[in-house]
Image (cartoon, rainbow, N blue to C red; front, side, top):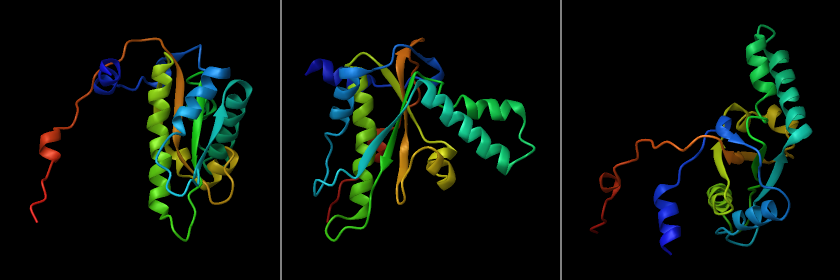
Length: 189
């Protein structure tokens, strides 16, 4: 239990640009995704799924995003286009967490969306348990319908985020954390 408590107390994201090879693959990746899926899921709907971006697929996703940007903004400079081309190659593996939340007679949409969020954090914990590190990122592509279609979303799906995974190439750094006692209110009736 102490190791788990230590991990939870000290968990940090590693920036995507500081994640190198190797990334999880094979049985380790399947185990990480299986653990990620062990979240509260009222109604057993599995209102989420995963899209993996790596290797040639990651490069192709970046090319599509650069093409989308160029079509929308012909004045976009080569630096900006190059950034989009490399968006999914910053880390050796990117896991897109897709929310498939949909209207249901018993399960509120919000519960389904929260379940997808829980998948993201579980994925980071599972990756750490396997000796990897990650960063959960959204950025504009998570909220843009056309980018979503180019990246593999089906009708009615949205990205909960993209978890960049790999092996840290630099030590983690700490950031300011919230003052938790200031965030606590006790209900008195």
